[in-house]
Length: 277
Ligand code: LIP
Image 1: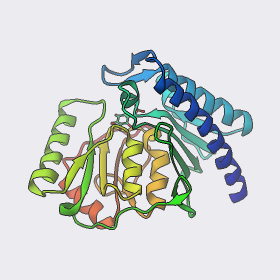
Image 2: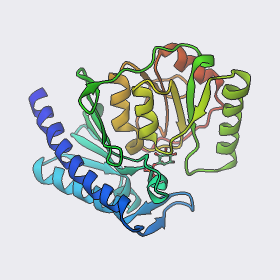
Image 3: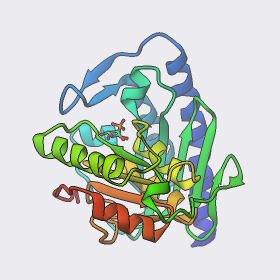
């Protein structure tokens, strides 16, 4: 099984590098066509669609019986099928708004789940050439070098990421503003950042640059791959309430330490979501 899994991951890495060239070229060239999905804040480009096609066609031609959960396929009407089969969870460009605005913080995300357990994650920023990857039990790496989450246990000493995504409902606004006020003003944390890509936010925690991250409303493809990287870097990944992480729950909390994760959870104004599978 483990040898087989290695073959899967090695091949996915090859495809991700090819996809990176495509994204890099589009980023550097004239604007690509931008369309909106669920709302004016939810963007998609032809590059997102081309990259997802490249990855899914490549993997399905090589590995029969594997399944796919891809952001743009789902946007195009595909159902999320969450089964025991080896399943690739793909975000062709995480941070599409950054991509559209030429902000170089974007990531191609490919996660692998087997029997509904996340096994491997690849997060590649083809603009900065930073390739993060992890496999369960094998550690987390950036461009081949091991990375570690921070050992910080105190909110006051933390740089925290609270990301508000494309959903701007009154409940989401209130949650974001209240949580922000608590960590920045009541708890006086070192600072707040948010990079506009769940995957970049999470690798920032995995490499110890930031100490914690919370987001509501994300999808499985935003977090599946980077979750493996955070865990293998020694960090924690939970539900924002502190309950166990469920990749289909549409919310995530990451931290360098369990203590910080717990304290951060207690600062948050929580939002409920229906699981997507
Ligand atoms: C985006 C996330 C971002 C989040 C947005 C959106 P996309 O993914 O990574 O962090 O705030 O809501 O989900 O659409 O660029 O792949």
